[in-house]
Image (cartoon, rainbow, N blue to C red; front, side, top):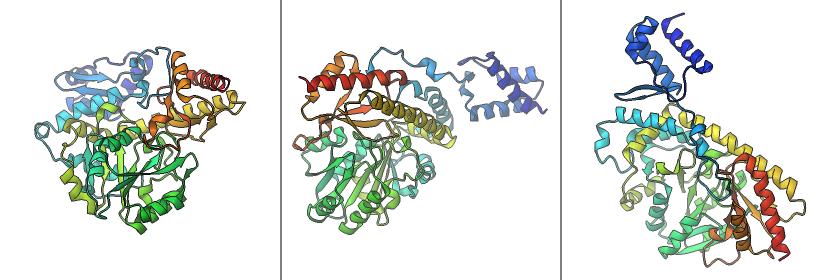
Length: 446
């Protein structure tokens, strides 16, 4: 066996036997060369391969270390059943993975990190994103991609900037992303609404609004809608794309949760856009961690100059961009995406099992969502929604009130709870669902 292969085999054997522990420092390259009776270059090559596999990571001027077990570092469970939070599970945060990439980024891009950089985004990351997005049927040129400090900044810019169609009204679904709705109201921007339920939207009504409503753009989440959790079908996506082209309306497709679904036959609306009327927005916070604050925007060419002119708040931190570039290139992003997709999918299945077990009286109408993190629990109109939310909080069960996801002037609201499984531990889900149904039943009898 060659020395290079022997080093790798010995490493795996020691790791399996527990001789190499998470966080443990490895012998230096020189020490390992003496141990294995080989050249320094052979050890360097073996360590590089172990880094590529993400079995170890390096810290400049310090050495090589075993990757730590992220799950052992997670915060202890405080007993609260959290169906409200949209943040990723602490147990699946890729702390060590991303620390490794940050170290590599400092080493690789050291001089570039002391400049202001391109406001459009790090060129290496934008080139990487061309290939990354293509895996999801989002085909774009490098110059069409802008990197921003999160998707909210991009949405704010798009809301305020003029569009080539010369119109002014922003069309939003009801319910929709609460922070964006609050921004539109705070800025007093002209807004129109269209109802969206677990069954979708009225496409005939959508066409009427596109035709007569002075609509500049239509904000939508085609996959894993927040708060409903549902996704458009293929025909709905095709119809929306066709109507956008017919009436010269731009679509702002917020695909912040797109990575949490099964990609087979589940393309974004952008994939059906033949007329360059879809602006595609992708967030990385739900896959990695919220503090990363990096979003990517794919812009039709007619919007490029205006977007960059109006996007004056600056770009995402260069170090974060460089680390994300490495994280995607070396395959860590895709491996992590698959890991949390499978974990969340299992939790959603557990949620449905619990509903089936405890909802025998049919008090809840539950959307048939099988991936992502959200679903909708519709409750009877006779029940006081906020009282249910408060009573559950007293019992240590946190849920989101559907009231938060509507414009303040929109009155045709569905009465529902937004349920998120991202922070709910699998062993807590049955207990939490049972508590929700008990409080809804109590509300019916109040």
